[in-house]
Image 1 (tube, rainbow, N blue to C red):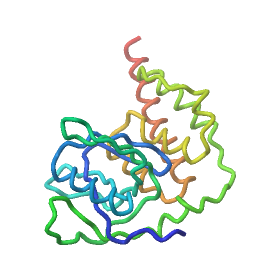
Image 2: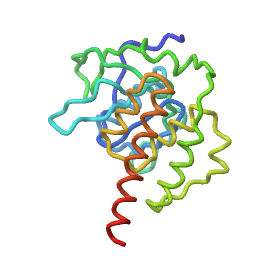
Image 3: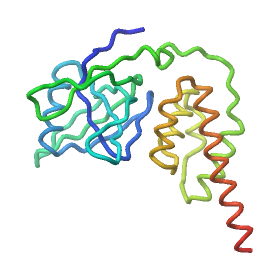
Length: 205
C-alpha cells in the first residue's frame, strides 16, 4: 500500500460524507479553510474530510483522504476545488498546532482494500434495482447509463454518497470495512426505506 502521511489537515464538515473514488467539489471561503487548502495544495495536495457530530466540535473517527485534483481562485477571494477520494482513515489523535485549522494523526491499515482492491465477485443487481426505485420515489434523477460505466467501487460509493439517507447511515456505510459489507448495509438501508414507503402508501389507500 502506498505510504500516505500519518498527520493530515482535516476539514470537518457536517452532513458531508465523502468516499474513495468519488469527487467532491468544495467552495472554500472561511480563512481557516483557505489556509488549510493552500497549505495542502502547496505541500502534497492531500487533505482529509470527516463528518462532525452534533455535539460540540467532536468528529467521527473514520474519514476519507482526498487529493486536490482541481484548484481555482476566484476574484472575491474564494477557492474552488475538487477533491478526489483516495482512501479512508481512522483518527488516532488530534495534533496541537498553532494553525487556524485542525490536524490529526491517522492510520490507514484497516482500509487497505481502498487501494489494493481485490476484484471479488459481488452481486449488486438487487442493490441497483432497489436504488432505482428508491431514487425515483424521492424524485432524484440519475443517469443510469452513465452510472453503469463506473467501476464497481465507484458505483457503490457513489450510491452511498448521494442517496437521500441520514448522515448517521452514511457514516455507517463509510465505516463498513469491506465492499461486501458496504453493499449489504446499503441494501438493508434502502430496503427499510422502501418498506416504510410501501406501508405509508397502503395506509393512504
